Image (cartoon, rainbow, N blue to C red; front, side, top):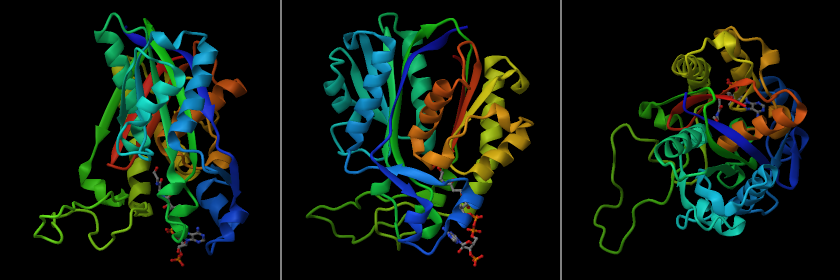
Length: 332
Ligand code: UT7
């Protein structure tokens, strides 16, 4: 089977630790509500570190662990929804910082499923380009810059951070399934700039069934209940489909690394999949939801704690805005 091998992983945790008690100082909430409804006790937030900076540190750690020459990296793919610039891409800045001078670079936006989409893109490049030796897949997110800190139902969830995988081709087990449902775009979104130019005659262009036009700020808006419903079905659907593509049963999987959005979502999804909780890597209590960085960060933590071992069949599975969903099954 054509698969990938992870030769290095890296992580960056930004400077600020924000506890539930800290959140209670800015919105009407409390530790008991947040921890029982979400499983989150604290999260890291940027103390000013830009997205490219966090991504660079995670990438450098993955390169150092692999002990490779960055000139042998053929692509830098960065999953992010919180770039520092519209252009250049975060991937280009990371390339400059790590000295991956021979790499082609681009960013990819699939929200919290972004890392799975990026990993599968990397696998396809490796499969079709004999000369591509290594690919750096990095996720970096500064969600706090698009978080509405006046909305207690969402601001308690989101956090910042980065993580990276350095991958090469291998004959290892691999299966990936990606999906999306644009009908659910309205359930979680953050607006970008509206069209604007000196010749415009229409003040606003209306699109039927689009996200709420009355909301003009650029912070994250979500319908928590709809996202919750989607997520509890999306995680099992994606995992089962990826297992089928890998040619294995869900029961053959040693470890699951789910998107760390809400512990209750993960518990319900695990129950629906018939998987016991001890097979899941969880770091949501200390990290919160870092969007595309959540899965590779949890993977890195799982490797460091010994929960993920070489040879394990690992299921990475996520969902997010779009709505998007996806799962990759790899052998570590
Ligand atoms: O990467 C994807 C990101 N998004 C998600 O994964 C979101 C998925 N959804 C969720 O995680 C959950 O729906 C939430 C955590 C957002 C909300 O949990 P819930 O159990 O669905 O709560 P709820 O919205 O039904 O609210 C229950 C009550 C409400 O009060 P009333 O109307 O019953 O009086 C809310 O106003 O809890 C209230 N509430 C809060 N209370 C204290 C909402 N947020 C808070 C809060 N602290 N932070």
